[in-house]
Length: 383
Image 1: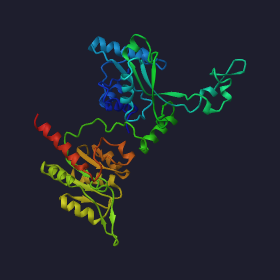
Image 2: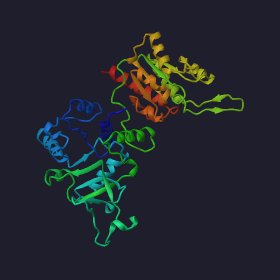
Image 3: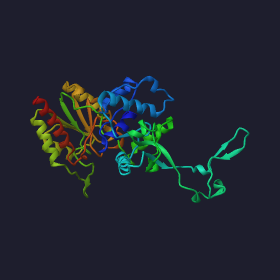
Image 4: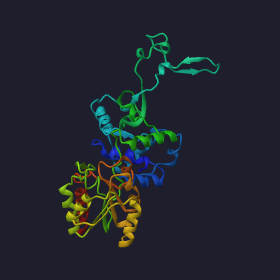
């Protein structure tokens, strides 16, 4: 999977309204991770601002002052994306920024969700043991005894996003200011990681892929400098993972002609391409014969089969690209130097690859990869 920090970086990079993504940290390892995921780390945070009880305000004041003094950079708006709230809607950042831009009288926009418990029914226990309501209402004598539907709607602030005007931080010395507008987020996205249970819930949400969310679509590693072999799964990569079965039990699949052209171009450029398939089916053989590429099928343990194949051919695993779509490809991802998944791969697969293609399996995914490989080859040849 990806480091927790990568999800917040991805949200910033994906937003059209964000021009720079900067990570403030005092930790060299975190700084390196941030850079690998394409964030900037132009400075290291002072250790006195990296304590467990450090508030956000001095951290952001330090960042803005450093950027002003060292780069003469003065942003109008600052977006805060906390790593502990990694599950964000794709339009979260842009929507929040738009609200602030459309309302010049507003100091900040804060992400909120409908609160699970109404604070008008909450109590505090005094030192003498007596209970007192936390909140009161002028028009309802005892709100704690009133039906919930009679009480005001309340919202819980989350760590998803805060969008703040720079002058609010520097002049008003506040992370929110006086006038705050909400970005109301679906409560299903409510994940604030404080405990192991929170972590596990976040993992389940991302693994299921049920919520549209910003994810690091790929680890930030370029294609291998040297490529000796491209290995493709068949079903779900060269096909759309569906199969038609006639009354005689014969199977048919649909293939993409663009994939065939992509494979042909790779071969002409000197790259070797091979298919490794779990299925034992004449249609696999026929398609690979048409493409004029070798195939190994009927493979139950694809990881062992790939390792044996590389040993036989004396191929360096670091110089291998493996393209898959399902959980039986996971062992191969650990062996190959570069792991690739089609866009509609199983959610668990998407967290274990170096690149997620934009195209689905059977809809030009292999052509997309071939174009990337050939483009990289041409760029390096022209240097």
